[in-house]
Image 1 (cartoon, rainbow, N blue to C red):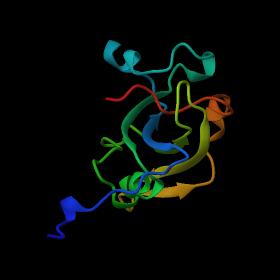
Image 2 (cartoon, rainbow, N blue to C red):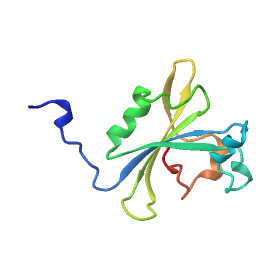
Image 3 (cartoon, rainbow, N blue to C red):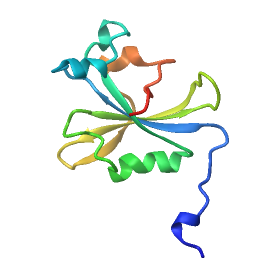
Length: 133
């Protein structure tokens, strides 16, 4: 048959991948607070994130920012994307992490080395990936 739907997806045996949007504006409503990271330090009161999906390999996860699938910047609400690889299992740790920044002038996600300094306290063992939705 050979159609696209019948092709097997390669699963990374060392981990799974998540794509998460990250923003840092002042919440405008109570609903915004529900999606912010208020339980972290004062640094994070205006930081919010949303994990959009879980993927079986890096290629599929990075297709999201490369092709701007899903318009995850949500009209400027989110400025960055984190693409993270997690080990399989309970309470998984981050194995790899890649960042993108939304470029309004070109309407695309641009790879960046790191997040801005105001998000530095969120580094280390912290995971950007949160509950899906």
